[in-house]
Image 1 (cartoon, rainbow, N blue to C red):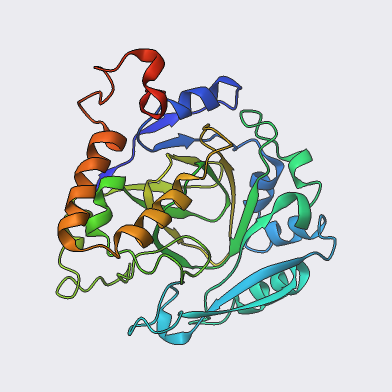
Image 2 (cartoon, rainbow, N blue to C red; image 1 turned 180 degrees about the horizontal axis):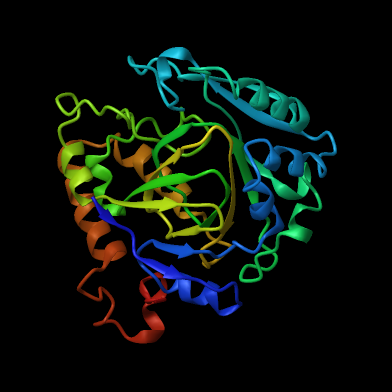
Length: 316
């Protein structure tokens, strides 16, 4: 695999504009290295837990714990009939107590408190650990031990900041979707559809096209203080590599027309409607979508007077 491009980043207002103009991921080395939380996390495995504890106000988090057969992967079981983990709601303090208790246990299950709102669960954290480049964007935190989240994608822009521990991201361009064996669109672990291929030992006999996806993949290794920019719809697998890991991420939306349905909702409706048609009609609709929606080379409205282009008018 090739490595993701790396730059030494400064936390400044122009960073957001620079990132939104990029089409590929970028490692932002040292972006949040100055955060007090990063300095505290370097003091030892439990130091970041103690630091977070001072902001805890008893708000509940959703905690996941993988089953033994999952080998630390938060995905589906081998037969794709159930998830490989269980969930429970508990306070952050209870979760941290579990995390500390598992530290000396060999072969401990993978656990994580995922996608918790910083402003709700640890209010005050953002006052001490600010990202000036993204004012007004509410961050989320992901705390746990050595856990792997299989290949998935997000719709917004994403900056993921490693605060404690180390993370490895494996990234795939959106056009690799047909090689990634994405699972159910509705029955998902946490909202985003994920690949059913086991990330640690992919069965290339069962999933042969995954080999092509791997050949195209890029990887990013992040230390505390580093961040990764992930463009919208880029697929990524995330591995937390230490016994205690904390990641803070920022999602912000792609600008569009707020009165229109989201692209994800539009896709789901198209799938539900068009999959009910005969194959020949689906092919015909695919041609229309390619012509009117994708518009890669041809402007489908160039021959129409501008005042009459309506929905065909190009917006970018």
